[in-house]
Image (cartoon, rainbow, N blue to C red):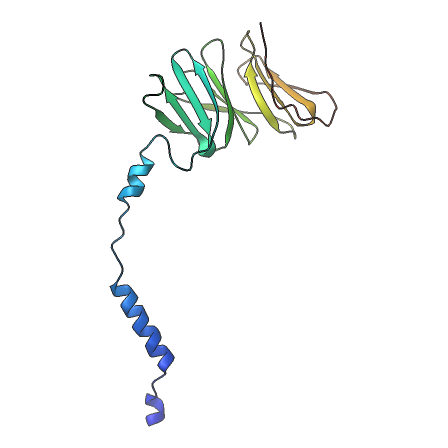
Length: 176
């Protein structure tokens, strides 16, 4: 009968440790996390590009972050695009609209200085690396394998061409 009541020292120590650790747990305080999440700029942001349209400055980066300021950078408004894409470039167009490029082959368009955004896909296997608007308001993107995309209808359709070279085009600019 004594064999059935045998105390196993390892089990007792484990039960005692669980009891002590459970009794010492501090209450979880997430107030600091909540305060941080309300800030327009967060410590983990990685900004990639900035542009200015009129009085509005727009900055884009990781996690779909779009920051805009209409007062020279004294205050900022934050928006996060659906799907949290990595935004690699933002440009201002002559009509005051904005266009941003993400790593998922999409161009995001805003007609209200960054207040709202709509994604338009870039077709094809190549990766776009840079984006701009020309003086007439056409969108242009360039990327891997010397690929060039252009759109005259705000990204509703794209024309794609390649120079046929294994070259990365990583910038595009128009001068008047």
